[in-house]
Amino acid sequence: MHKVALMDTSGNSLLSGSDGSKRKVCYFYDSDVENYYYGLGHPMKPLRMKMTHALLTQYGLLDRMHVLKPNPARENDFCRFHADDYVYFLRRVTPDSQQELLKQLKRFNVGEDCPVFDGLYSFCQTCAGGSIGGAVKLNHKHCDIAINWSGGLHHAKKCEASGFCYVNDIVLAILELLKTHERVLYVDIDIHHGDGVEEAFYITDRVMTVSFHKFGDYFPGTGDIRDIGYGKGKYYALNVPLDDGIDDESYQSLFKPIMSKVMEVYRPGAIVLQCGADSLSGDRLGFFNLSVKGHAECVRFMRSFNVPLLLLGGGGYTLRNVARCWCYEVYILYTFDKRNVVHFKIFLLVLGFIMTFDRLWKILNLSIEYEYTLHVAPSNMENKNSREMLDGIRAKLLDYLSKLQHAPSVQFQEHPPETQFPEENEDEDNKDERINDDSDVNLDYESATTEKAQKEIVEPKAKVQDSTVAGEADGDYCKFSKLTGELIKI
Ligand code: V1D
Ligand code: CA
Image (cartoon, rainbow, N blue to C red; front, side, top):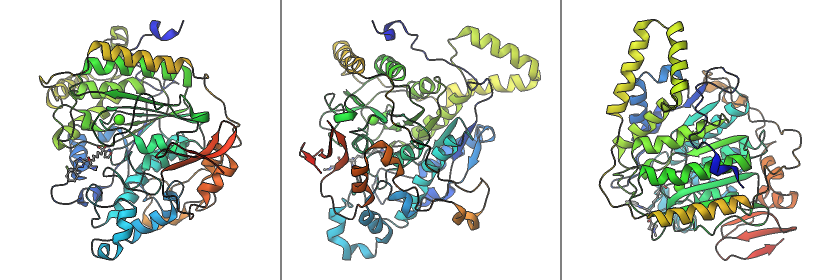
C-alpha cells in the first residue's frame, strides 16, 4: 500500500530551515522591468511587477529578504536551450526593423501574442537573469528560497516564442540547478499548460514536470492527462487537466495528494514553482475560482518540504490581484501552518522570549492586515469539476506515480563549473567578471541526455522546424517530434 493515503497532506510546516536556522530568501527585482510595454490592448503588463514590489515595500517584507538586481542573461545563457538563430533574431529585431524581417517573424511565431516591442531583448535578459541568478544562489546555498516574479515564462520553445513568452527562463534556471542537483521538480500552477518546460524535459528523468491547468479549447491546447513523458522520461511528466470554476477545496484535493506522492517517490534536490496568478478568481484571461489563500496554499505546501525552492511568476492579468497574490506568497514564506497549534504555541513562546511585547504586537497586527487587504475572495461561479472527475484524475495520477522508479539516480559526474555572478551590490562594471562564459554551455544536457543528443543541442545551427527534444529513448539515440509523434533515430 502506498503511504500517501496515510500521509499528513498539510506538509511539514516548519518555520525555519532544515538545520533550525531561519530561512534565507533572495528576491530578484529590476525596477526597469515596469517600463516594458507589450502594446495597446495586450493583456501582459510588466507593470504588475512594480505593483507587487510596491506592496512588498509597504508591508515591510523587502526588509526581510535579500533584494538583488538580476544580472542580465547573456546570449550564451540563452543558447543553452534556445537555437542560436532564434536568439540572434531576438537581439536584432526592433519595432522599426520588423518590416524587413517578416519571414523571420512568422518562423519564430512573433506577432500578436508575442509582439515586437521596444527593449524586447533587454526585457528577456532581465527576466531570465533573475531566474538563472536565483538558481545560482540556491546552488551556492546562499539562500533557501529564491524569488523572481518577472520569470516563469513557461511557453517559450527552443526556436519559437509562444503565449507572451520569448525566452524560457524556467528551462534555463532548471539547467543551472541540474549542475548541483540530480533531480529537479517543476510545478506549474498557472492556469495554462506549462508546455515549453514539459517539452524541454520530456524524455529525461532528471526533471519531473507537473502542470495543473485548464484543459479543453484553451491555450495552448496541450497537457492531456495521457501525456506522461517518453522513453527514460516516461511518468516524469504529469498533467492535471481541470475545468472552469475550480475552487480552493477542489484544487487542493488534487494538489496535496499528488505533490505529496511526487515528493515521496521523486525526492528532488530542488523545486521550481511557477506561480502564474491567472488561476485566481476574476482573472482577465482565466476561468478558475481560486482565492489568494488557495493559490498561496500551493506555495506554503511546497515550501514545507524544506527543499531549495525557486519561486517564479508567470501569467496573471487582473493586475491588482496579481500583486496581492505574489505579495501574500512572500508573506506566507515567513509564516507557518496556523492549523498546527503545537507549532504555533512553541513559536509564540520562543517569540515571547526574544522579542519585546511591542514588536510582537506589531506582527500580530500585521497578520490581521494581511488577512483583510491581500485577500481575493472567490466568486459564486459554477465549479464544473465534479467530485467524480476529481477522483478520477487523482486516481489516474497516483497510478502513474506508483509506476515510477523511486528517486532515479543518474551517473552524476563531478559537478560542472557553476555560473558565477558577481557578488550582490556589485555594479555594472563587474558584469564581465562572470566566469564560464562559454565553457559550460550545455554541460547540463550532457548529463540530462546523452552525448550524441547533446551534439544536437550544442550545434543548433541545423534548423529544427518542428518542436523536438533530443535524448535517449528505449536505448536508441532519438529525436522525438511532439508535433508528429514520430521518433526519429539519429
Ligand atoms: F487577448 C489578447 C489581446 C492581445 C493579444 C493577445 C491576447 C490573447 C489572449 N489570450 N492571447 C491569448 C492566448 N492566445 C491564443 C491564440 C489564438 N491563437 C491561435 C493562439 O489563444 C495566449 C495566452 C497566453 C497565456 C500566457 C500565460 O499566462 O500562460 C503566461 N505564463 O507566463 C507568462 C505568460
Ligand atoms: Ca499550469
